[in-house]
Image 1 (cartoon, one colour):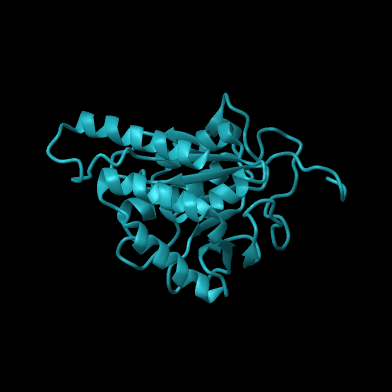
Image 2 (tube, rainbow, N blue to C red):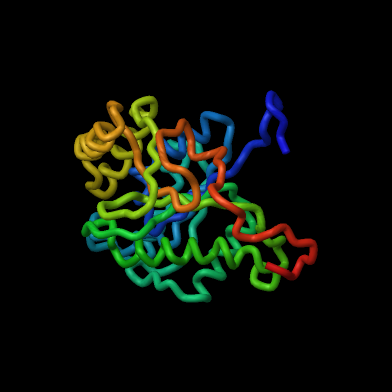
Length: 256
């Protein structure tokens, strides 16, 4: 255990989403962790190839351009980026899909995961978003199982979940002050607006100001805390899991 005054080892935040541009409401969460010396890995399950914003071009060209969009987004945010090849509008929460993402989790070894959650509003409840959230949350458990992720080492350390927050959520809310990251938020929004005509930077900033008013801040991002206490935080990591651990420490490699 790290003693008071000792430097903490850098921790890893995995951000796992469905499409490039899903991350526009998570910029402060990512940059807050990066600026504290942490590692952020941004994973998209699809290439977002069903977009019509790029015009009547072949699917292969859309995939190429959307992959480049993601690469540039990673450079703007200062994070690592990864893509899987799930089909856009065809993401389904199956055991096989969860096993694929579990192998990514075993490779990345995250200390926390930020993804899609349960949602009620039209945009947030996109079927790909809902399926991605379940796949990722299931994958955190499957990544503990050696036979699922072999030959990679299983990932058995706690990896608490945070998700986009929507109305009617029963979870504690955790918020991050977004004002210090305003320039990066706007830069990412402008990048996607130039390419996809979404999001409008003014709309995004007004949305963040609306969240900020709930926390007595100029701007804020807000997430559901599935396993941790809510409240205003400087960064999602480091974090303290609430209650007793779900899994005791085991000595045999093939146990959960």
